Structures are given as C-alpha cells and as structure tokens.
Image 1: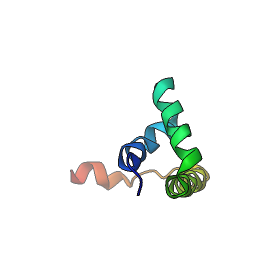
Image 2: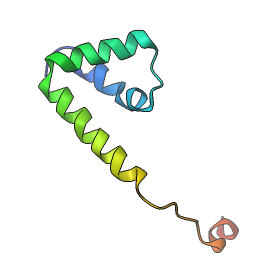
Image 3: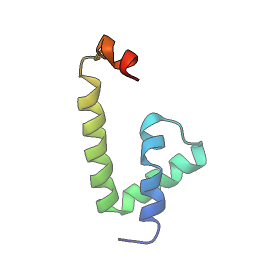
Image 4: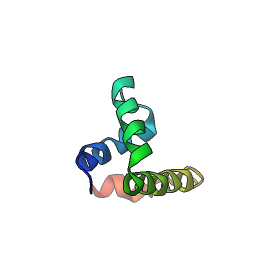
Length: 68
C-alpha cells in the first residue's frame, strides 16, 4: 500500500456523499489516478451504495420502541 492510502480511504464515505471540501476531493481523485488498490476499493463501495439505494425502506415493528 502506498503512502497516504489509509488517509485517502478514511475520506471515502465523505467523498461518496459529496461532503468533502473541494481541496480534499481533488486529493482523493489524484490519488485514485495512481493507486489501483484504492480505486478498486472505491469502486466496490460505490457498488454497495448503489445497491443499497435500491432497497425498500423498512419500518421497525411497533413493539421495538416500547421494548426500549
């Protein structure tokens, strides 16, 4: 793993949500251009997020709140 991978990977969630400052987003994109490992991990995470967005919302059972 090249230097900086851990720091870049720590930013993936914010990057995918569009919550990074532009400077950090540019750093992530530049890193991804040169790091196949991180690019592959991000691609996998994007697939998970995309798949999760197709799931129906679930309502918790009524007893759940009363059991707390």
